[in-house]
Amino acid sequence: MSTTACPVCGDPSTSLRYACPACSVRTQRRLRELQDYRDVLRATLTPSSRGLDPLPGPRGYRSSPPMNLDIVVALDPRSHASGAGPDDDADETVLSITGSLHRVAEYVAEERYRAAVMGSIVPRPYTLDVLASYLWIHTEWCCWQLWAADYVGMIRTIHGQIRRQAHDAPPTPLGPCRTETCGGTVMPRPGRGGACPTCGRSYDGLELARLAYTPPAPHQEAS
Image (cartoon, rainbow, N blue to C red):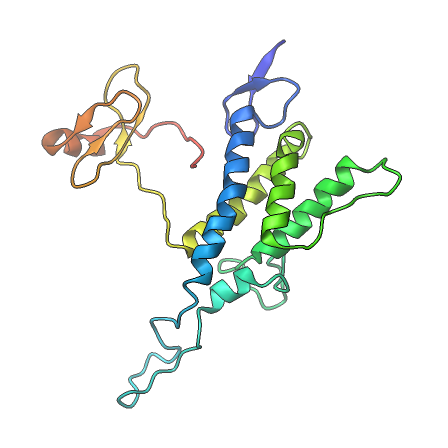
């Protein structure tokens, strides 16, 4: 069977797929992690570290809401699921995690069971756990559809938001590995320096400084 590049990540894929097996596995992993990040956010509903008024107030005075409003919006299914409310700032939109998953699940159900006698059915209750599990089951099927890239991208967006809100930012790559034919990316190493997970080469001192003069590696989708 002929192969072509995956429309999502660029890796080789069968010509009949619209998102490769690696994209399917990554998407399923992101759906599983949503539940863990949700638990972290529930434990961090604390007041903001800064007040809304930048001017100094009386001693002991603090103008701030009783909890982190961005997290409240993200965990509330009644929030704008599409992040397209009339007062939303496009650059600061906070998606409703459960609401967004519900909309994606409804679309998947409608597309997959269009010809079913009973129509589309999304399992209840509409909680993050139920919806994430439902989409996990159907992810492989979704990756064979024309709209697979949109599906993978939406799950990646939801996962990225809740991951940032849980303060679990991925480490910043230090640069492409300088070993010929390796093609790996050097990542920070606990303590100091860095290492390439592909070939195992360690970077420290002058070798670490030389990474700044190495052309950037080709784009790869973040995990």
